[in-house]
Length: 303
Image (cartoon, rainbow, N blue to C red):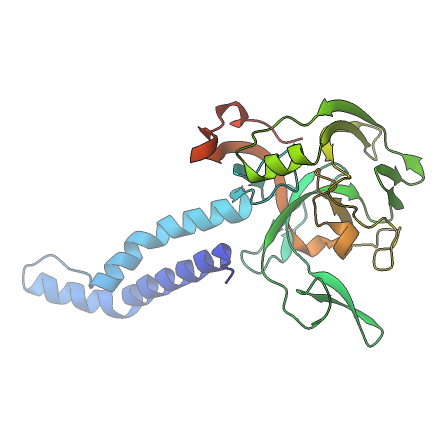
């Protein structure tokens, strides 16, 4: 079962606020008058006392997580070597506008994703065909196209903007007809005690420095991993993913190009699914068998 923590926070904030507010409006004055007549201090019922104490705390947490920054944990290796399994990151929640908690409806636009941004978003689901219509499904095989899409937060890098023409053939990425340059750094170096790192070592993964051009002429230099012996993702375009990115959508990929379930598999990421822009690693947990905490990654800015 997937829990939407923002929805839980919103529900608790409303619950505590309503309990405290109704008590002050309907019951507090009578309770205070009775206590004053008896020469005693007014005592709130336990539920009201809890609501009064917890309401401001939960409200502040909700506001910070919804409009300032929210922590996330990296669960998979799809963004290696940029982000590792066990990295705890902070996500800027106002980089692309302010959204209603839990509902994710934008009510104030402050910017749009740029090519090369690392973004967190709600997984939109896989593309399936039903009676000639394209639907989003939680079933990757499309055997059950009506399967509900789980509420999950994913993280990928923005490769294509609305209107861009994207092509991906093997390792070669083309944006609007121009190949994206990449230089080989060398073989991947990792800890064989960790599952994701061991897989990349066994598959002979190599690390590359990709030079991703932005629309303003600047370039985002970031690392990617290649291990064609492991997997061969579908090209772009393919039968479900067109070359031209639709309006209101973004094409996203993982930096671990051969081990990432991304837009090559399930199409573009709708703008309304955006959660924010990843910007900082604040903790990197490697596990008891791999050295506990990687202090060298703490405080690293995400590019």
